[in-house]
Image (cartoon, rainbow, N blue to C red; front, side, top):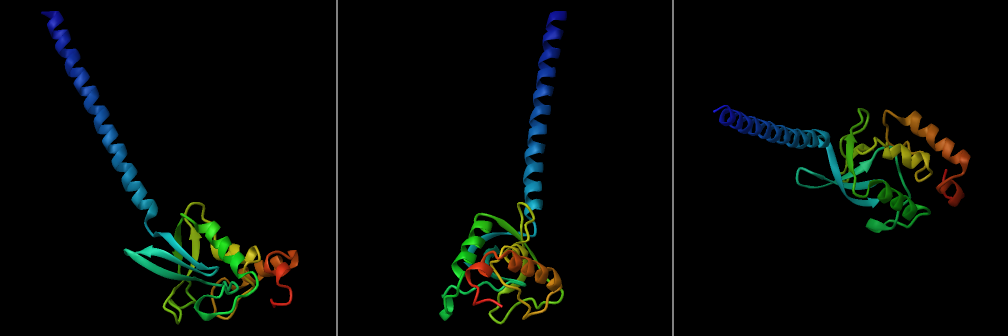
Length: 180
């Protein structure tokens, strides 16, 4: 009789342990899915790099063009523009930075929401590590200082451009007579 009770108790204990394990696994999987959704909230997958200062992201189920604030990389000949020194290098650099990445788009209080081509105007931050893509382009000489349109970080971008020019990197070395 005691053996039978012990056997029955062990069976119930095994069922309880298995049930607990299943509940914990399901909870962990659910938490993972919810946390992944929260981590991606407000970030968008990069679908295209049009040139060094314009990207395409997936937003609300469709591609949305985004123009990077504070950056004006040389042209690559698209949309009937001239090919400019260091334009292809800038485009390739942005592709290297953003290929397969998600980005966070940050509006600027001094900038309009869209430009005349209906592109969103944003500072772009790489989601995986917080890299400030706009500033990175200026720091590494892929864009000269660009102050044609006001934004709240003009001084920071001016300093970055001056340092890139002093270091003679990027277009500041390759396009000496073409940048100012």
